[in-house]
Image (tube, rainbow, N blue to C red; front, side, top):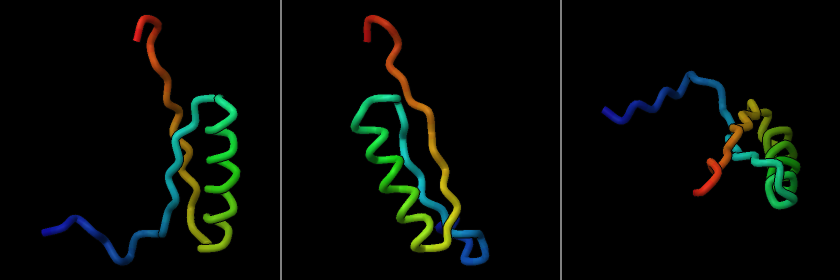
Length: 51
């Protein structure tokens, strides 16, 4: 069983850290979600001090 549910709403998931690159990724993901009429799921990511 794959766990895929064809009835579930489409979604676009994007990681956001606050960096310039992630802000760009969020903007592109939002445009893609609008184009696909999908939910946008931004996920906050961070790296703890010291890595």
